[in-house]
Length: 132
Image 1: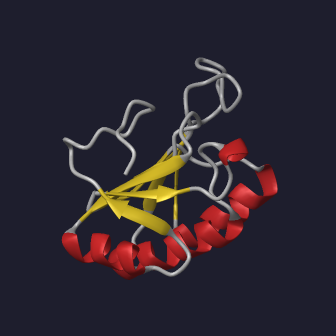
Image 2: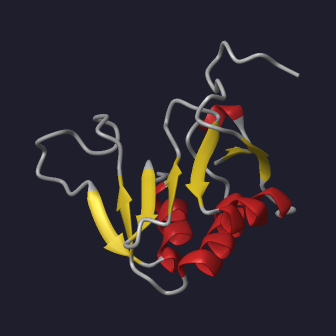
């Protein structure tokens, strides 16, 4: 698992266009053209619960960055049909969490655009995390 720092603390849970494109390119190398699922948060700002608005979408990675750019909204979770990786951009966090196979984690850690660090399930990632 890796944490990818977002570009701006004021845009918690939101990837910049450059970050989104870099992440999509890396994920496409792992997912290919496989359909993915995209889910919005349950918070009212995104899609009120029981509002009748869809919160789960299906599509390809190619549309993610354009969708985000047009609406200035980021999906909270995205994952492929085979569930080989998962992205979580929580609206309340200044980073995105990405889980996947070792080859995907390695590719993310080497990416020149994304600022990533490797974490484990035991790594504390909240405001009480020890700072290096």
